[in-house]
Length: 322
Image (cartoon, rainbow, N blue to C red; front, side, top):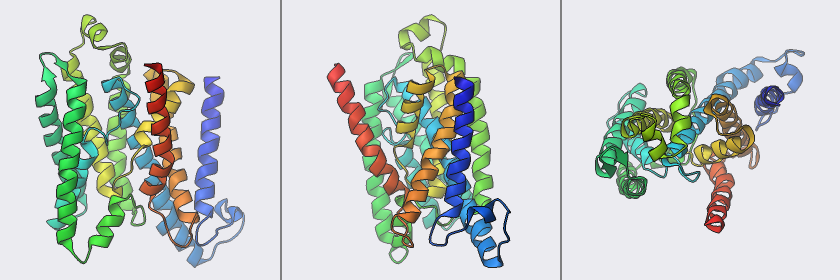
């Protein structure tokens, strides 16, 4: 079953990428994409300079956000947990805006965003740590409070920017229109590093799902492990936000659905979370490009429209169980 599902996933990925390359304000025939018919220079420019970088960017960011969301849900043992809820994304957004205000090169946006995430994560852990354990409820409350606080500062910074505020506002809603090959290269590094790290920690992640007491009895340093996992998650989200802005619900929806299909074991779960994170976000971007074409809807708006009802469904489902 797993082998068939994997092959089906690869087929879905190919179909979604092909359709995304084809549709838009300018239609590119699938025959041309498969090199079965010639392309003029104008079409080649659209394909290789605009659409292909954007599609790869959407897929890579989807992979990053979904893998981070999977880890955050395991840390909190809560399917409603998301990197955006605990303040990681708001910290990254604040850092990226600061980098923009300081007129730093684009390469440093992710670095400054990550530094802000690190400071926020250290602060949250300092407040919520009790001995060798992390008080999850305290951590969530502090994260939400910090998120609101930084969102206020970010809004003020955007207000002070003035004439370029529209560009920043579009970025905040999740925008991939400025995707470039340099950005893709910058995202591949955190993707490889984080995926390798999370997969190396797959057994520890499985143990964490049993609960803190069980994990502690098996010799796991819970606070240290969760801190390291959150640091890597912060690194992932920071680089995603720096290039694409705020895109919510990817880390909520994809891990939850994949866990129900594949099962909880991270040995199998992590690869499929990566694949379907990319598929989900690329689908959102494609819909954003074609619904009101040639006008584009920010990818974050589409993701929120699809994700908010799913979040409400999960919340009601958990409430009924209790």
